[in-house]
Image (cartoon, rainbow, N blue to C red; front, side):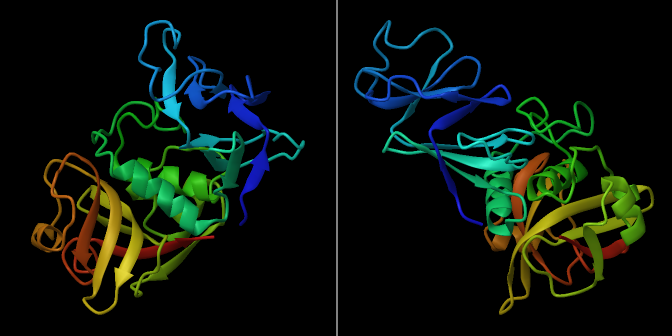
Length: 269
């Protein structure tokens, strides 16, 4: 999947032309548009009157993720994907679609969970937006990944009780783009699920360390933490609980395959 160059910035479901192409640095407006602004630099952006109220200085280079489903780029191509926007020093914006791009989709999720977003099972669960990502639980985190990767055509609320079988998982996401893999050695992008006594947990495989049999997981974890907190702590995982995080677990340990409610891995496509 190759990035694309566009002379357009994304704003409110429509691309807009850059403003002041001979300017200095990138500025994000109140409505979310990003433009190359004349006479704004790292040396003067804090000066009164340089930025308008609500504007944000973004420097000479800036990256962010946006939902471009149904949006045309500057060349008239319908993108129909979550994208990584890269605002570059050459005054152009390069975008990379995440759909079907596992490396970029995992990169997005890693950046997201490492913000240690507050864990919550209530609130908005079906929006790819700042509002929808202000608090997350484990299945909502997985749903964001599946939406970004393109396995879900719409951002839908799912829960672990519907993710324990291949057929149930497919019904939950409204797509056949998920395959039950069982208790395999996981690959990046695989999704684990356990469900036991009315409770469940799920997360995304970021990487697998074959030598030490360790799985790095992207997840949202409740205050009670995991059943393999010791492995996570001694291997550099985030020890915070009640947040999104990157964790490290033994593949056969109690947080994964060794859990009494283990259902296996599921692979998006």
